[in-house]
Image: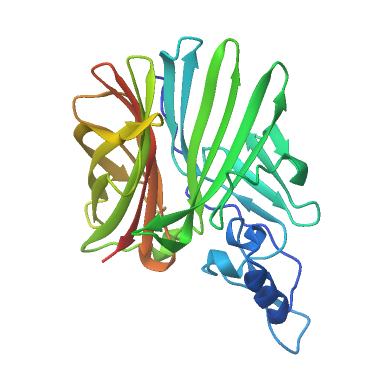
Length: 315
């Protein structure tokens, strides 16, 4: 496994242009994902020319240009699908997702270098939903795909957590980044005592014997507990999946358990799963006082190559 890097705990905040509350309402009524899936908001102070930065505006309240930091895992596979490299990056060290409201476009970058940009013409309407935008375009001799997805638990959209998947596939193999961001908990607002348990939702993919199984949130489960005083987290993931050709025939891929550490003075956390190899998991707490959480994971257990996401809401 490549060496992990822990990013700075501070979040990147992009100031939005002032927008009236009526415009936000119109955005919500139109079902537009530009507000629901991108960025950090500034909320207008009625009757003044000032803008008041609201670090915990919900994803539905966002408007204007936005820039996110993230926590991520990156997996590289060769042309046969075999994993050749894996790494995790703590919050602030993962890919950056930027949204341009005027162009209605997304840009993905890493360490200050642009990886790709996606315009409205790249949107895949057939695979996009009210909580997920999927883009695809030609990238050199291959294909680049971006998916920006609202975190959900029990089928209900979370307020502060979103996931990003960016991948490039060509004749040499696939490079994929799975990232989590949204409205991260500010360092001073992180709990420093007690514990928190979260109601969770898990999903992922499993590559076994050359076949790809999809593990949906309806059949898979996860647990997550944070000890804020000790700055540790414990988690488990139990994936049950099926092949696209035989969706009614499920395979139980068992349960993995993991332990991790919460970064000091920040909202990020990361760790590894017992009896596995690979990147492990990396995530962040979101919303005021760590109301929500999300993490991305990638591991190898036996011959299974597994990756996915876990979202949670504090009980």
